[in-house]
Image (cartoon, rainbow, N blue to C red; front, side, top):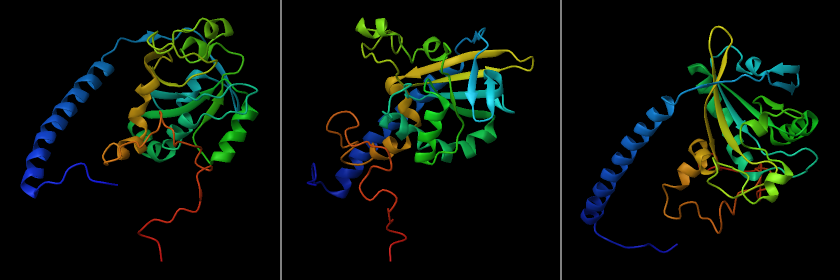
Length: 243
């Protein structure tokens, strides 16, 4: 890899300080937007959604466990399809490490897909994930929260994905939704994000954004695969453990 430009240490430090000012401004803007996100009004969830889980049928409120907040990963997994979304999988690979921390801050996690429970369980076993993953098969949940679409919507060329800002349309797409509950058992929808809005939880991108090659893409996420499909998958040796 060839350097973009070679300068003295003093010139580099001057450029770095200028970038730091931009980074600080971005941090403050991110904090401001996060406040706006938390301050969004809530919508009461009136539908009594019931999901298929390894422990039997469970209502939405039961997916919270002992916590008052629930984040849902809308994982693209279409009933009857053998396609496993690499992008959804990349995000899911980060969850088990993160949830051992955020579960201590009153937040539960569940992945929800329209695929049947046996289809979900097969993927979960293959990938080695431990988080809860349930099936919304036969319910309107995915459609109600903007990640699944009818054949007619797909054929229209703009199914309304990402609040109508994206013409991209498939039977199932990805996103994240946030729910809260009160002591009386009422559930509220507080937030949903789609498309690139889900990137904030993908730590691999944040690492890559710090380095000269960036995300090193030839097309969006061109190098991303299921983690067991990379060359030498499962046999990675770090510089700190190599003999």
